[in-house]
Length: 228
Length: 304
Image 1 (cartoon, rainbow over the protein chains, first blue to last red):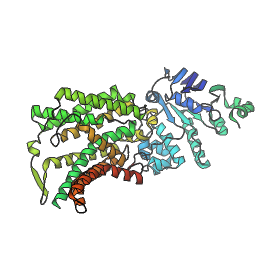
Image 2: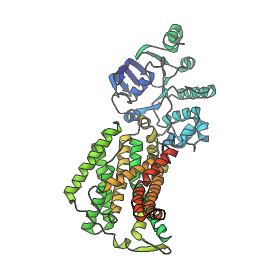
Image 3: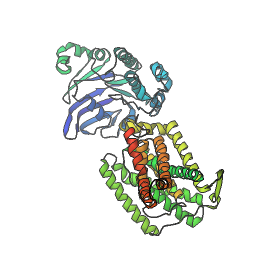
Image 4: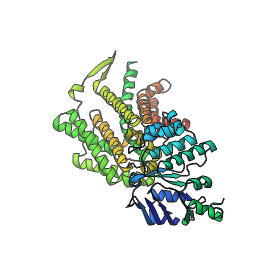
């Protein structure tokens, strides 16, 4: 459903992405791994059209989406849960969910059932939520756009262990329901358990790709590229 | 006492007028990050269009609609043709470009209507005075302006607080890029907001016609006061624009009316007049300085 090949991108004169490739088939959970500053978030931003690619191709759902505007890319069916969550602080929880919603499967009730905490806080302003609640809201907000592909950028970063576990449970459940998901994260154990395919990037290049079994079979990979 | 009541109403009426101008300016500044000096031109265009239509047809209602429509159409046109290229540029570029637009529109109006001020009449059905506070007759037309302004404030409150467009406006004020990444065409939203703000500026201009003369450059002075309003109220916040507009309108009107008189009780009359006039024209800026000292982001900052 998503194929990225030879992707290059730059902030001004400093090139960050040199040769990124990535592929996701329908229903798969695919991970993007790499140390900080290697280009994971930049890859996501370029995929979403927030940064213009300098070269390479991005195909989604059979269409070439490189150089399209972010709103058109999102409307094709990519739901972004951004790094840092970027909840709308001046909107209530409920408003955060419905302001940009479209499609029919994911409704307020379904999101509230997935995250009962959000139902309890539905009238509270987004800016007053805890980090974990904001993360649930960011996931709920992306789901409410009924995406074909859900993109989670550092969705468990900076959260308490209990909340992390809840986010991972949610990701697992979404995968079981057939949702295609792209995950950027650092928790190797969870990624290996849930991921169908993994891509490791270093200094703006995809340097390795494979299955969880292949990742297990090459323990030096994690040490070399992920620093664990 | 009578005079005080009358001046308070005058302050309220001026405040409401400032609110109509400030609402659009603060939304555009808050959401698109654009400093739009040409807002003054939209006010002037609204006033000219209304005065012209009123002169032709004699209908005040048609005149109001014409003022609103002319300003909205001009606003949308300049947004699409020029301003949307400026959102990502720094404020200096925006100030230069929109100041250029003021010059352009001033000359255009002078070519179309001449340099002589146009006079617009208060319509008959809004003429005369009414004594709704006993002993204080007050012009019906000015009361009508207060009512219209308050109605607009209520409508905007409903729009921003309780509709999906309003949610997107509030969301876009803090995370413009994120709104786009969730699939909303913020360009369309921006044009809509800009058109709405322009229409309100046009409405203010159209209603001002019968009070002041309609002339080239009429918006330039009130624009400065409008910027004071949005800074006092908190940039990007319509609630702040309302509070700031009423406060500034009141302070400006009351100091002009009473400060020279008060000073006369403590100094020579000629000095009191001179100092009073000077101080009262500074009053809104002193107010702004005080507000910024106490609340650096204004009374009701929009961004959380």
